Length: 173
Figure (cartoon, rainbow, N blue to C red):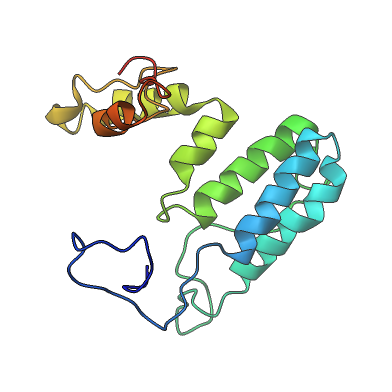
C-alpha cells in the first residue's frame, strides 16, 4: 500500500516495498488445476497429458543428483503414466495420481492443506498422520483434526464486532 493512498494509516509507520517480482503461482499448479477439473468432468484421458508433462519435467530436471557413472542418486524410478503399460487410467486412478503429483510438486509450498480441504479428505489424511506420528512425538498424543471445524479459522472477534451483526463466528469457534 502506497503511503500517499487514502487507506494508508499512521499505524503502519514504515512502508516496505520492493520492485522485485515474486511467484504467487507456478505453471505446474495451473496444469494440475486444469487436470483436476478434467478428471472431475470424467475427461481423465485429457488430463493424462498434463500430469505427464509435469512428470517429464521433473524426471529431466538438471537438479537431480547423479553418481559419477551417470546413475541417479535417488533409489526410485520415475516415469510417465502409460495406460495399459504401467497403470489402469480410470477416473479414480487419475484422481489419485493427480493428488500424488500435487503432494510431490508442492510438498513444501503450503498448498497441501487447502487441497485436502477442497477434496474433502483433510480429516482422514491429517488424523492418519497424527496416528503415526504420535508414536514419535509425544506432543501429538492429543492432536486431532475435527471435521467441519478445523477446515476453517475463527473470524477475529474484532471483525465480528466491527461488522455490527453481519458476520457470525465459524462453527465450532
